Structures are given as C-alpha cells and as structure tokens.
Length: 338
Image (cartoon, rainbow, N blue to C red; front, side):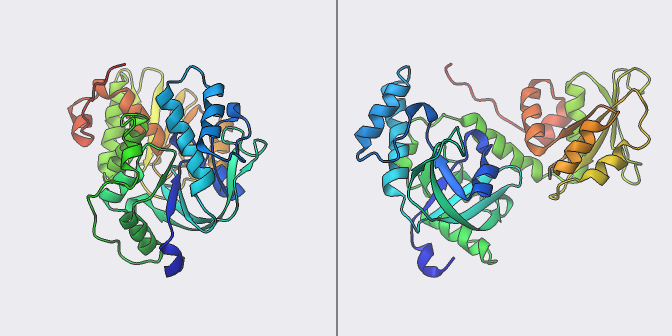
C-alpha cells in the first residue's frame, strides 16, 4: 500500500462470530455485514431508516441492542468509502488480511446468506497476529463487528506488511471508544479464546505436549508422555488404567508449529495403530483438506484438534486441570450477572 493510501481510514470488519466466515470474505473478495431478517437496507438514506428495519426484524431486542446494530450498519453504508483500507482476521491461519474497499454496498444474500450486505475488496497483503504488539492485539480485539482501526495500529500493520519492524506499542484507546463501550462484555468469550491461543503459541513444544497430557488427565485418563527423541509417531499414550491395557487406548501426536499438517503426516501417524486404538492429532498450525479427508476415511477413529479446538477444550475442562496444566496456562475466572 502506498504512503498516500495509508493516510486513509482503515476499518476492521469481523467475519461473523469468531470470524468463521473469513474464508468466504477472502475467496469472494468482499467484506460483509448485517442480518438477513432485516431485508435489503443497502440503499437506506438515513440511520433512522436502518434502525426501523432492524427494530422490526428483532422486536425482542432492547432499544440499546438495536441502536448499536443499526449504527454499525449505517457506518458500513455511509461512512466506509471506496479507497479506504480494510482489515479482517482469519483465525485458522492467524493472519490479518489487508485490503482496500473497491465498491459500494450491495445486497447479495445469495453469496453470504448470514451477512447479506457486502462491499467489494481488493485483498493485498497479510500480517501474522503473532508479529503484532500486545497493544495492537488488544485494540484489534474490540467487540464491534465494524470499527475504525486506531492510527498507531494502522501504522504498525503497514510497517509489518512492508517487512519493517513494528512500531513502538501504544496504550491509547481505540478510536471507537465511546461506541465500543456500549456493552464492554459482549462477546467476551470470543476475545478470551483468542488471547488464550496467543498464550498457547508462546509455549515451547515440550510445554505444549505436557499441557495436552494435562487436558487428557482432566478428562479422566492417565497419561504416559514420551521422552524427547524418536517417538515412532506418538507423543502421549492415554488410558483409564495408565498402562494402555484398558480400552480405549488413546495415541496422541502433538505438532506445535505454524504449518498445516497434510495427508502424509496423518498416514504416518495412523500407520501401525492397533485396531482398538483411538487417535488424537493436535496441530497448532491446523490441517489441510487432504489431511481431514485422510482422517475421516481411516479405520482408526481419529480426532484432529486445531489450536481453536485445544483452546476451547482447555477452557471447558479448566476446573479439572491439575497443577501442571494450570501452571502452563494460568487463567482467571470472571463472574458476570447472567
């Protein structure tokens, strides 16, 4: 992106809950927002027009909820401009994708049904979440579906995309502070999962292996962790009796690296498994489509666990984690009225 273009606003558009539609944004060269139930409001002339549609579609919502939702949509329609920068996050690859708004808002429910109002985007570059400062990670974790990225974060992202070292971190608030503060605990769980993933990626391989073993112990298994060195395709053996005599015996492989595991890695892991074994393959870099297919058609029942899956499993079992698990992933419980 040129120096002139970096001076324009940059907007972050979240690709649905937990960014599950990021691949759709990227493959279709769009960003999208809104709700199908509210119909076509792409041609709305005022914020009130949008609010009336949203309120009619969601009568059970509070006035505050509908006001915030309508405000988000109106910014997408009216304030976001062709030529502005845009950012979306893909949790599968842990990449923030950078692009430029290339078209006006259109209503296209046949493309991304859940988010029917879209704008064309020219995707250009991507930067890893792992390369960002903690301050930038915090600002980009804002709960809103759409918000303007703070200038210092834009500068850091542009520098990283250009291959330069990142800017000094800042502690200033996001530009959308007043709007973001409407409901500061909305989608708090999603933000927590993303930060937990950051913590997990900071562990070394041995620590990750120990943490996976702690998770299995929390689920009621006893574990044997392989020593460092050649392990013949298994890092952990888990069973109810602790020796692997009692079924099921779970054979676990842990790969703690950025690259996605492919079909060959899954075939190697499955080779030599006993008929009654169960396989658990943990890859913080994810899996290719071919790897998923290989696991699905294997005679040995095998579960492929991604970084997201591991983070969610650890949260759900955290109360049962032993001292080793809690030392490797220290978390604090937050209570909030239901």
